[in-house]
Length: 386
Ligand code: GLA
Image (cartoon, rainbow, N blue to C red; front, side, top):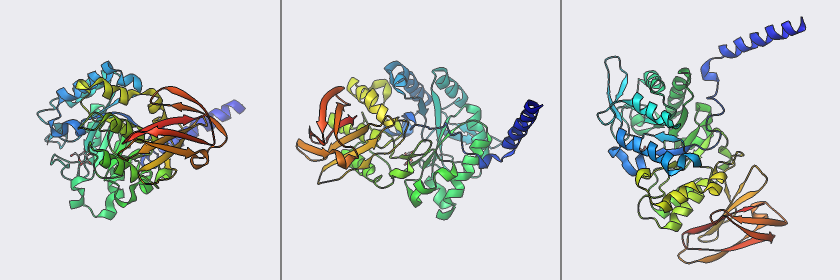
């Protein structure tokens, strides 16, 4: 009798839960539980992207071992959009003749499919945006098997007031939720209106914090530095996004690429490789797939590193990890190799710690109260204190 009562109550609760309007439910809490990892076409290909380029990237993610290292999203950025059909449904352009087929291909490799649009009438590169077609676009993306949407403000400023921005993003979130397909929602509006304060409330899983990255050490550092002070807003399901990776692009030195990857992992940033995966140097692949460094990014505690201090071009960052250890990054932005000493108390630890170098995969021994290392120009030393 009692059991029957519980069964009836249980069923009634289930029905009630299903009746809660979708807008009141957050996107699956398991979405982006750790920062999303994958590849995005923009940094390397911009509008030279095509179905062929994207399939080659999907092939290379698997064959290079990047998939095994955790990279799963294959994201087409701007420039895929064609015209709308008679019903108003968006189609791919001549370089993307079969979006459903592309999604199927990506999924057949055990990967996930990402796409890009704007709430404005046009995207940043002048292609068709989602303005007045939000519901239809969400439906179309779901029908294509899309798993990730980057939604870029671009021309939306021409049709909306700045104070409407939250509603505009929420509208697409609700459209995505209504499809029933879990789709990671990535906001791109360059950090306007302190997006980190309201991103989660409009369903965002991540939000860009600045303007665009480019393959230059100073630019990369300044983007990272712009996240100083907004650490508390990052966490499982909702991340500050300092933009996609430039590792392997442009003319950055090995140390600069290692610094870039280290900073992003310390910041719990999404790791979206932005290089040509089908033609990358072994050195680039090694930087992108270092398992001990990626583990810092993907740590389930999801704490974004904070600046312990900064003296001239020298600074240590600290990131507490789920197992009780702390990752520490020593950064040298100067032009010469320099010893940097970090006091344990400045990074929230005390006593004697074992120190492991995460790039060298080497235990460095036990240290009491402080740790010191020589750091090369534009380089880093990344360690774990445990
Ligand atoms: C903006 C975004 C970039 C990229 C381009 C595409 O500049 O910030 O990341 O998506 O648009 O046009």
